[in-house]
Image (cartoon, rainbow, N blue to C red):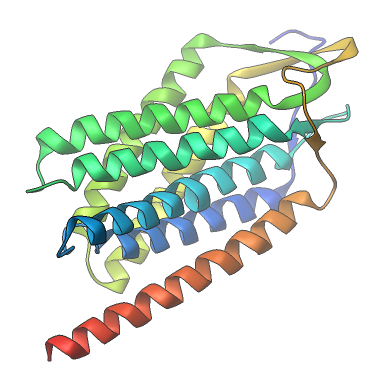
Length: 250
């Protein structure tokens, strides 16, 4: 890192919120993933993959990533390109859906788990670096490629672990423990990726993509609040449905 590089100082509150949202998102996604192997029709399986993938990719991973980005306070103004930010979220969601579909197709096995987790991990890492490219600021970003490689490896290993947990963990206590571990893994990938970046000041704002930009002092806490409400709603609906199915079987 150069001596003139701009330092990123992380806000402790947003750091904590980024971890909590990844835990809540992981727990909710693990609950929804139960419906994938238990699906009674292709349509029901597709809906379960979509719900679990959107929750894992959007709630546990993308929301954590963006709150983590906003936690990074620098001595220069930073906004985020809206188009690239939304696209990064879609990359995370779609890669999680594909990972769950591959790993959860047919009889669960390592032959499905490793390719599914690798695809999902590459998508998660791609989401992170697309999200980084969305930064608009009077600075240029350079990367330590060794640390970038480590962050991608963490993303792949974490994704393989996430898929294994999704199809092997049952029970509230086990899922909560798994979600706490997943939160550490997701945050580990993000903050390793941030460590790979160095920011050098320039005289003009670096704009990577034409379109509107978002920012603001309270954006991180707003995203946390909105995502929490959505995840709790999804979790409540999922729990009620599972209880109804259990009563029907009785």
